[in-house]
Length: 93
Image (cartoon, rainbow, N blue to C red; front, side):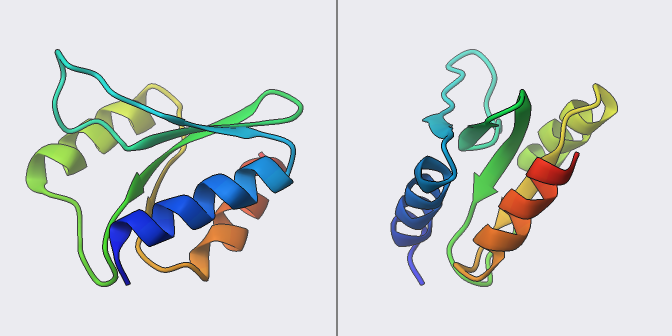
């Protein structure tokens, strides 16, 4: 499945949950996750969207590790079926 399609489904699901899935662009810091997911009750996480079966590049993995050390949740999404699970986990934190 194409990354664009998975990302569109994520944005739609987050909106349906009452949140926002902001496109995260950091020109001065490559490798940052694609989306910043903001949900009601101050719930947030970063989501890296990949085409089905693809894994993050080494630089992306390093950025994810930095964000996790700072206490943020970071998810890698490569299948549409993962969206509900990810949103449920973000809401549960």
